[in-house]
Length: 234
Image (cartoon, rainbow, N blue to C red; front, side):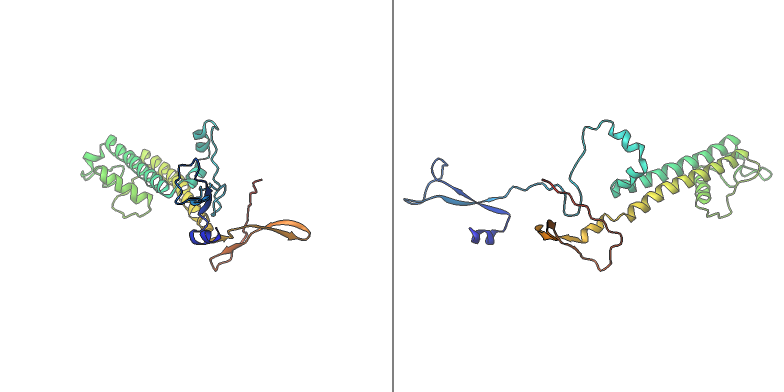
């Protein structure tokens, strides 16, 4: 039996069966019990090797509203592909919305048709259509300022929209960039370079039975303020 274990490893267990009533035909007279190698059933771990706890909470009721109430943490906990999708979608929608607002102001004032008149002062200079309004918004939001398109003092609604654009842009930048920064700084993958001993032992330490295991760090960098949390199932 020990030879079989050494040959096939711990993924198989030796099962002794009898030929009577099992449908197995003995190969010769007087043959005793037979030994078979049966794959071991994979036991689901309570805690993975990387420290992730395999526990899912269910039947809590109104789970969606609970996640939306803490939207920032929900975005941080999402997978990278969803974070990038929300990041790109939010900026795209915000840019198109604000560019549409500048185009609406130019359209209602008649700047699209009178922009080429020499003595006419438009709300935003050199804005003729939606692409030019979109470029003006990008130049203003990104503080590029090429100088070709600029807002004039004859447009109070444009000044109010410019202030609203600045406030909205600051809020969106702080929310999304902060979310991405915190997600990149999370040490979730740091656990991949930590090795735990395959077996834990119980030994006497200072006159008490103590559960002991080893933890190894594959990286040369030292861990600062490291915390270890263990769970014991009895």
